[in-house]
Length: 377
Image 1 (cartoon, helix red, strand yellow):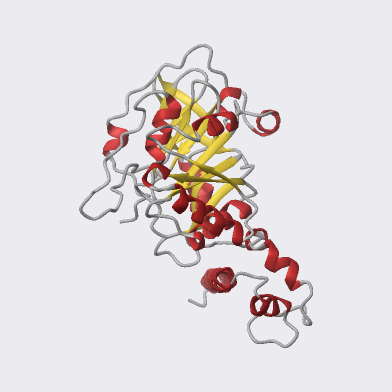
Image 2 (cartoon, one colour):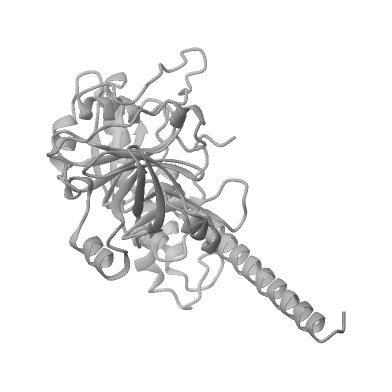
């Protein structure tokens, strides 16, 4: 079972909350664009809310009046062409409240942004991590989890979603200054255009810098492996034990799962954060320019290649390979780019194959129905 799966008991233990009268939809991230869509497309009798917890086809939706345990309507379910049409954490939805703490979801608003990855074990399908995100905190533990190649995967997810990434290096209290400087230099050597904030949950270094970024009404998504300190950091930012945490297993030095589901939290001092389960796999589902932004140095160099369709592997006149050989381009960065590029191409070819099969199947069904109507079957 993937670590992103939610346990059923999470919703069964949920208790409805009455929201303070001071809470507004804008505090939850509601914008003029969403309001304009609502006026043009949503029935006036429906309320508006944001999905704060998701479990399959059951949701907790919050608005300025309270929180509601919700399910999607049959029409919304059957009209969906794939799983991405279902609500996800961060989505704005139109809902109809039929009990004090119960509601039905009738529509999902168009998403401004959506962070997604390849669905684990489902080739050619995507899994939504969170929707309507403004910034993403990519969190890696400096003492054990730090991996630049993995970081570049997260950066690609963010750039593909048009979400601004910020790197948090956690647990720096477990390192000496020399070790931390080495990590910071390695990030700089890869020419990654990303803000880096070293953080400690022990002495709270880096917290002020993070809090200054948490603008009211803006949504920040936390991404990273299990046990890197995402939930602990959010607890400190929220000012209470909002999320349950577990200790690191000293025997294996691996993080136990601290979050079993995605959850959206409105902070008291402004800003909205989404905690996500640790991801074992960060599959690239890039169909845009996410890779190009992550590896912008390689992108610039590729414009100087002799051939416009250069694969940067063995072609003559390849500016990228020349930069690697001269030491201008980091060799590990180059190999990671090729790996992610192959993964991207494989995913896109899988999608194309899947669409062709669906199209052929549709034609076959149509032909069978036609022959049956004509009495040929």
